[in-house]
Image (cartoon, rainbow, N blue to C red; front, side, top):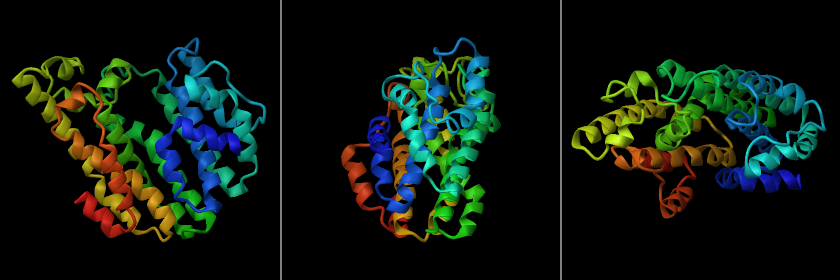
Length: 314
């Protein structure tokens, strides 16, 4: 358990802070759930460790049969930094996973398998110019984030801290995940384009760009025409993400446990603040837009009730 607690802080400080909101009886389950999916995500993200796309796909599709079944399973040369250390020392995560209650293990294994299947679907796709259309954009977001929302809802229900029916809130759970993922994709335009693994849908950005290159926006932001085109595209994607807000607020309104409410609400509040910062902001095309630490602290302190969340959103 000590390794899991330590590695979480190193791979995600933000999640390490948010997870502390949870009751002890649920904290370990969600900690393990996150680390398992982070390990899977590290495999997906590594573009150099595998000899071929087929090899990566094989690792993804078999992850739940290997990493979650074999207590000695590990990967030594995938990922960078602390993510690599997570894979290298994965047996320490497995030991904690193996001690979870059977219903929690089933949720973790099921979501992991389905997410891996979705990730494998995108391995061979050329994402240098983004996803093909909004359908593919939404599908990718569902696999890498919507399923996380579903898994969390099922773990909430399994813990007894939320009603058993919460496990069936699949649509609302999915929307919660999509809102967070779309916010990240919008914010990370430049980084993703440089990495040649972008997700802005071509069916949207090609309506605005004067060329067939997603990098057009970054390259032409210094001209009036280029700026107008870039901001038009950005604002459409932000508006698309904002359409998820009513479902996110409905989900939060159905939570009964105060600790779970804060755990779920804090990332949503940070996301809406990030979208507010991104909207009509040329800096999205020249670097990474971040909300100020002072604002983050203020939002954390004002995310205790649904009415406070409504005030932040509206």
